[in-house]
Image 1 (tube, rainbow, N blue to C red):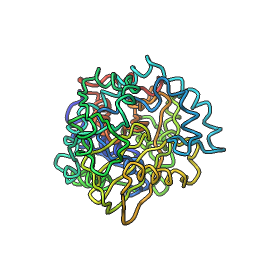
Image 2: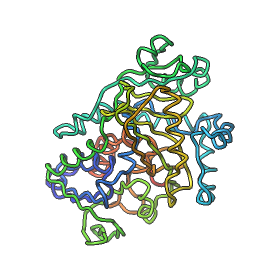
Image 3: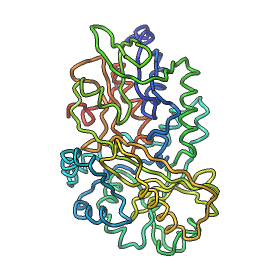
Image 4: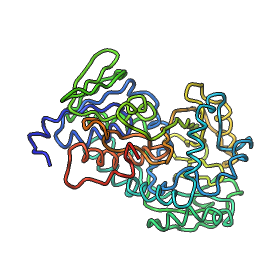
Length: 417
């Protein structure tokens, strides 16, 4: 391991101030490094803000599972399907999508799950460790999760997913109709079965959480530059980061700007294909129905989260829309789904969000060094698990940058896999 003197001198620039960037920044600054965090819009509503806000250790399976290929037409052509393709943009993504579909095989999903477990286990503990000493700690809520079904037979149809979770140590508690009514008052009578997993949690306000983590970073002496990075140039013994308004130098650069990482990372040898997967959420305020627990709807593929002022409904998958405006049909579907789940729901007002998830072709993020330049590192591509996996990713890449003796094996996440 480097000597403490060397660590104190290590000057690292992090491009991207979402949950992955700020987690890495906090880990490294606590290890004595000089850290500069660069983001063009820290108050922007990125994927780190707009997700379901779950801290979800059970999210160890990819979106595409074995047998799902046959269900895609129904998902696409049903007015209530959770999958959208946007033309003409999706035509450019066809090579990616065909390869993406090729990972929906039993052996590949088992491999993906094994390496997602590393990132997701004990997510509550990891977030508490990350937020320790900052005001962000107050936004972390501990809670069980409820996965709801209309009947037990439909749960059994999802047995491959549940068997994987059991294999990785999750305890599944079956909840029958009467108990479900007590746990979720206001839920439609259509739903008569659920699985409960204890020991999980969520972030009650994701924007405030990110803000408080960034403030904690500043209090530790971290520097923030709000500017757009236009180029990263590696020189003999330093890296130059060119922004719209200035240039700065660093010993190392960590690229962690989600879907926007690709334009920089390709020149440093990243070969893993990545696409924007647009996500949506709908937040209803001052609802007459309040929920106490995060809910996953097994049919609608929706994650529903309690908020201090109402309920957030997040989900849907859309490819081909990187340069297009959000799809109003997606918001209409979310509202329709909210009303079908909670038939008597009323609300004072609503808020709609859309943003870009960075989805790799094999559903594993890119974490680790450039194979062609030892001054450049990557941490991005976390598709649906970025918030949950942020703290662990920060620790993993931090140990790698600092060349610790007790590093994690980053081979499954390597940039040239």
